[in-house]
Length: 98
Ligand SMILES: [Zn+2]
Image (cartoon, rainbow, N blue to C red):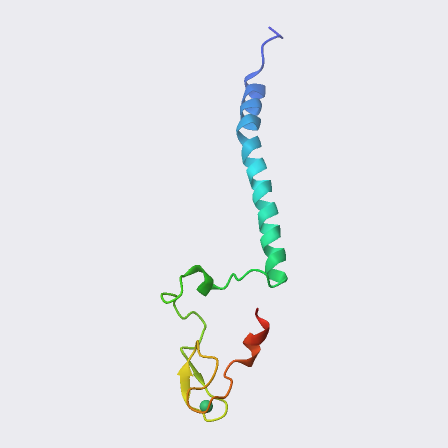
């Protein structure tokens, strides 16, 4: 009678067998998440919404469609680096991104 495993112990054993792979997977994901966060903080990874869409079809999320030239105040496409009217540089801060 005492040699039988109690139902509670059997349930615990099954739960451990089922949950152990899940815990392992979750820990592996945690390592990946930590790695991603580290890369993002170092600026190595671009997690902005636009990076998930291929170029050309990406929506303008938080990005201006047009850039106003600081010199001649004419509008230029947002992906242009220099003004098409006067040639002034439109986005000097992008020089440090790559
Ligand atoms: Zn201009």
